[in-house]
Every structure is written in structure tokens, then in C-alpha cells.
Amino acid sequence: MTGNGRGDTEALREEIRRTRVELGETMEALAARADVKARLKESAGQARERMREQAAQTVARLRGQAARRAEVARAQAYEKGELVRAQAHEKGELVRRNPAPWAAVAAGAVATIVVLMIVRGRRR
Image 1 (cartoon, rainbow, N blue to C red):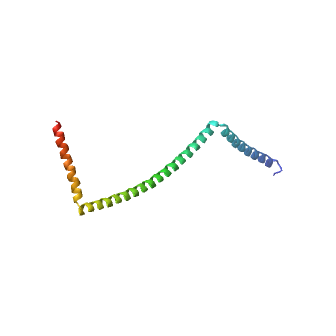
Image 2: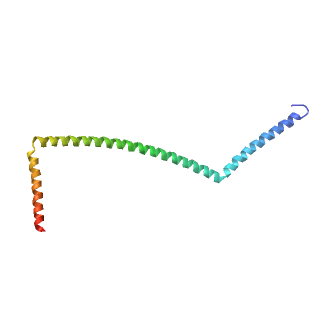
Image 3: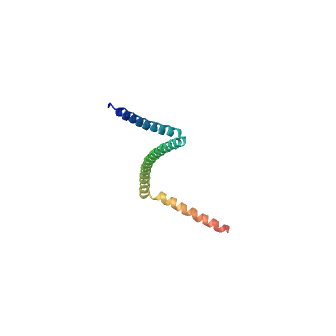
């Protein structure tokens, strides 16, 4: 401090300036709290962002599950295909070894078709 009082005046002016700044900040904070519309918009924006994040997580989870299930289905289809191929190969070998029963079945089918054609021809 100086003896002429200038130090006290400068200190008071600085104190007033700081108080004004603090008061301005306090007023801005109060105004922001009083602005219900802005607070609701902010709250809605936050809720919207949370929903987007949850939706993205759900989509990612479902895609992962679908990919795993598709892989399981592919594996099962492949196994079934292999089983059917093996069974068809066995049946083919059986027919090649002993074609007589299959020839009899084929002849019976041809005879049935011929008889049906004759019966239909007589009706007309």
C-alpha cells in the first residue's frame, strides 16, 4: 500500500471487477437453469444419443448371433449333404450289384402305365 491511498483504490477496483465477473458467471448459470426449453432440448439430445448407442449395440449383437447361426446351419447342411451322397452311393452300388429287382420294379411301372392308357382309350 502506498501512503496516498492509491493502493486501496486500485485494490477496491480490482475487487469490484472480480465480483462483477463472478456475478456475471452466476447470472449465466442461473439463466441456463431457468431456460427450461434449452434444458429439455439438451436432455432430449442426450436421450437420443443413448438410444442410438443402444440400437447400434443391439444391431451388432444380432448380426453376430445371425452369423453364428448361419455358420451352424451351413455346417449342418454340409453334413446332411455328405450323408445323402453316401446313402445315394450305397444305393447305386446295390443296384449295380443286383439290378434284377430294380428292373422288375421298372417293368411293373411300365406295364401299369400301358394298362392305364388302354383303359382310358376305351372310355373315349
